[in-house]
Image (tube, rainbow, N blue to C red; front, side, top):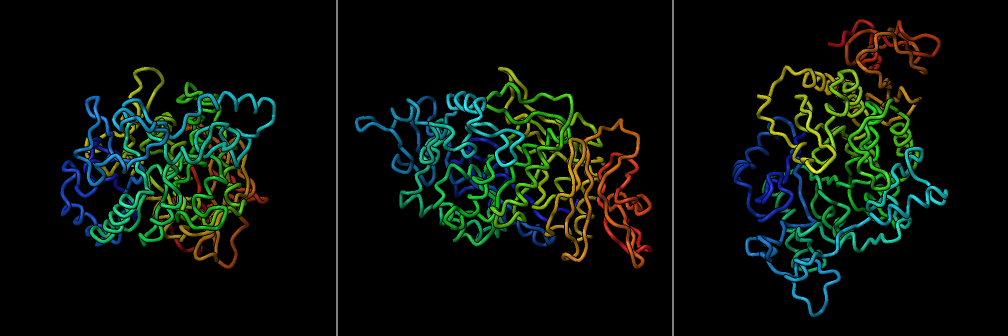
Length: 496
């Protein structure tokens, strides 16, 4: 398909098969293979000119509660209570009783959400889809800050996810072991970059230290909609570098609604709204978030923001939320591949996997999104596989990867943006819409590029078809609702 890197789940010995609840940081999950196998994978990727992105967790270890009792005996290297946060533990309380009675959570916004809803109705707080810098009215950490009275940045760091052992990075041993472990991964496995799980729950000072010493890029997971908060995870208000990159959740949360009319967000913690469809898709929210990110000046760089249409945590895959509509899925994937940043495609999207959660007590949770890939027999003839290969080739052949971007137009039905290509000497025009596969008529976009000169013509980098004859009066009349990426080429050049 032409991708540059492979991002792998945390490969360390753990309870869960996804690796996010490690037992032993220094051993490889035997279901994945051995240390030698991991080294071989890294070397094989590098031999192909590709890179290895490894997922890591700094925030926590496996659950410290086993069969209803405290058990740390198998955890390596953090097998003592002092290595874990103990916020609100009473002086006379044993660590086991503290654990079994439930440490304070990293966040609990249920009461705050009701309070926030009242403030919004009184117009004392602005948030929601019409506010691109804060698109969700939610007290999830990082979204609304002081508008949520019980929000506490320190508890966000020191609070726990259930009984998962929340590491105290201010403890010298924890800090030393973590730094040695992460730098050792780079040395031992020649890791090219990291994806940092649950980044907003780790002390920012420690995250900054890890970024400084590790010597490779780190993309942090920050499941937030507040653009100021998000940007400050790269460089804080005092100008201190935290992380070089982030997974770009604010536009992602808009993608299902933009292209397929699917509700992924849950404002005011009303999670029963997730997993449903509106009567109409609407591009407005996605376009406004993109414009806000491009024009705010908050971000040190958007080139290291990871863009995606689905992942292993959120409610549904693109195949599900777009109801398997080929045209809509193509438009969503073209956004992923052509928007400024690093395009990320979740495994199985290229095969049309359609995992999703649903409402109610039988919700299968995130496991529903983590299907096995072997059942697809790793097909290379799926249309999604072939389409992603075409997008990758178009992106590389026209040097779009690191070019600046500009929003030219948006409406509820369409989005037009440009990317600087060929080192800034040319522009690629990206035309997207949310029409479904039943649309048969021409699709009119305004504005469009000016006609080519000096023997140059506009071609669609996806289909290879010449398009300059469809440019008229400053507009582009597309022959159908398929996404279009117009690039300027010599007239006698045919894009294959």
